[in-house]
Amino acid sequence: MKLIKPIIAALCLALGLNACANNKESKNQNKKGANMEIVHLTKTEFLNKVYNYEANPNDWKYEGDKPCIVDFYATWCGPCKALAPVLEELAKEYDGKIYIYKVDVDKEEELAATFGIRSIPTLLWIPKDGKPTVTQGAMPKTELKKMIDEVLLNAKP
Image 1: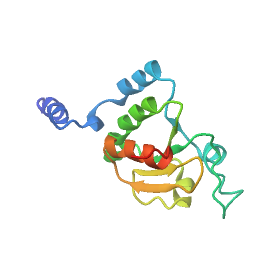
Image 2: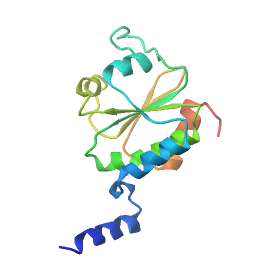
Image 3: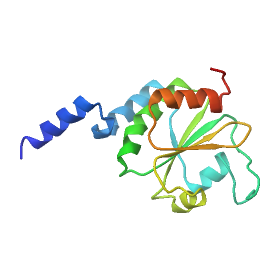
């Protein structure tokens, strides 16, 4: 029984799974090193910062001044936990260019249902102008950066 914790820790290190690490360390680094932090949204904040679907149910109208990513996640979800530190890194790298928001589907069930979230993590990619794009699953950082550059920032490859 005493060997289980060291074995799990060694496996996590060997496999590079950040989901096994305590997130307090990465949160503290984020607060010290970067201006931009990931913002956790409630329904009210979502309506004000992203899209007020109650006022505009038929017309998409993004409320923000910079493109954004909305991560629909759950605290118990392994792939969501693995994606979280990557999104924190991207928040630092793209500070001032995009917003990164998170919505806990267990706390904001109505919001998740409104967007038909059936699988997590689900990322909503919202350019400043135009319609949003949706991806599901934890993507590698290189793919996330490609999506940010091409979909959100309209950079040509």
